[in-house]
Amino acid sequence: EAGVVQSPRYKIIEKKQPVAFWCNPISGHNTLYWYLQNLGQGPELLIRYENEEAVDDSQLPKDRFSAERLKGVDSTLKIQPAELGDSAVYLCASSLSSGGAVEQFFGPGTRLTVL
Amino acid sequence: AQSVTQPDIHITVSEGASLELRCNYSYGATPYLFWYVQSPGQGLQLLLKYFSGDTLVQGIKGFEAEFKRSQSSFNLRKPSVHWSDAAEYFCAVEGEKLTFGTGTRLTIIP
Image: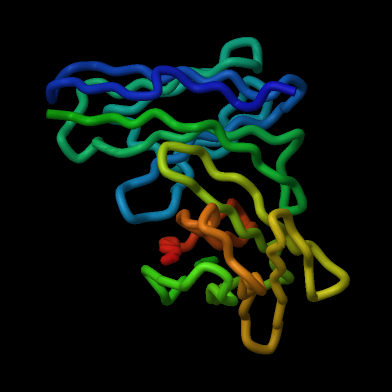
């Protein structure tokens, strides 16, 4: 069974440029998550999707970040414009459903460097 | 609000020695608890989880953890570490969302 796929794995951009990250969850997983992981920190939830609906985006900085999950499968996270402080690892995860007693499966992440 | 504390930022142990990584959580209700491991350049892999029942849970790679409600702790243990266990370990609690601690970096010396 294929795991969560993310691309690109690494991205280097200059500040004020746009950037997009793509995630393909495990087949059949209805719930998709985007996390931000700063250096030396644990992941922090940015947004959670149930199928194509964003049900928790309270931690997503909406002035520059946007996300979509068309058709309830793949998802894209975008930053426009990027700032120096956005340098981090962006992790995507998926699960069969949401709620406490479920396991989230994580992708390898996209490491973003903003110069 | 829920939170997780991992008091040890970095731990170094000799190969073959025993290991215990500490985790304390704060959550008002019965918690769902997880330990994840992250190797360099890799995503997080689930080691074990506690939902209910037996407070001593077994995981993959020879790891186990014990849930102690009275101490709000969920410490991770392994009786004998291998060089391949060197990684970053994250404790997490699921309440309104999955909340991670800041992680403990494990170094193994020969």
